[in-house]
Length: 333
Ligand SMILES: *[C@@H]1O[C@H](CO)[C@@H](O)[C@H](O)[C@H]1NC(C)=O
Ligand SMILES: *[C@@H]1O[C@H](CO)[C@@H](O)[C@H](O)[C@H]1NC(C)=O
Image (cartoon, rainbow, N blue to C red):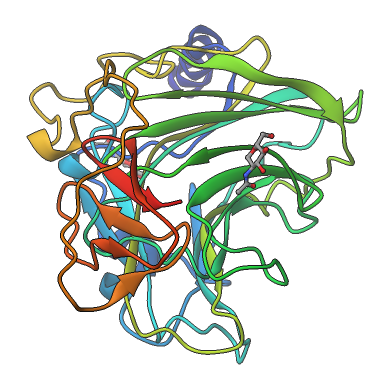
């Protein structure tokens, strides 16, 4: 009787939790060491960890209450995924640090929303000269990309793009210390994909209505993390990507960035002030005053000013340093 009651109770909890099919949330006990417990012969839920370089797991994964979107009160912690010059996996020429759901749930039928929030910082910022594939599926039916796409003209591209089948549909200039909240709107029956997004603590809004796509997943190929294509070379520079609010739910969508179980994370675990993002930055396109001191000059689309930025502040002629997202980011245009 006791075990039957336990099963019934569990069912009741699942029903109340509603439409979450798979949860990648981190509680206050979650640790980097948890990832090393996963192996092919010990496939523990909820995460697989095998796509990474040869260094210790702690070189590629960090966990902290300051690594999450502070508005997300379902997570107690967020995760930092780092890519660097050691991040070659399995003899491949791409640098990769990715975690993948481990679940028996079917994440590939019906109408689902794949949620995650993403942030980068001025420290260990991603290089806009390299293509980065972010939060992708094996077939690349939907994903984010950052930086100069492989084969594209130019030397750098500071935009984060949402793509269907590798083709950009939408973009935004990636500003450091800004939380970008996303949900991929995937209808496996209608064969469409759309995008919901917001920044900071704002609720998700539909950004791109569903468009024709070829969605498919084996429920184990939602790659949370980054694949970097260093244009045929190797980049030793570390790049950090912060993630939180990772889960898959059945329609209808939860738009609150607090998550499906707001307040379930311990209180007082919000991040440091560096992750707080003002939502009402006045727009401006005024050129930033720069000195004409000699020294390295930034190229078109490269960063030239912003909080924490320490690189070249003078643009190569004829470009001007434009504050595209003050005070965080200015670029040569
Ligand atoms: C924390 O999360 C892990 C992984 O989901 C789980 O195994 C563990 O039981 C959780 N701990 C607590 C205290 O909830
Ligand atoms: C970003 O999107 C706009 C609007 O679709 C487009 O004009 C622009 O070329 C895109 N920028 C990049 C760098 O892809």
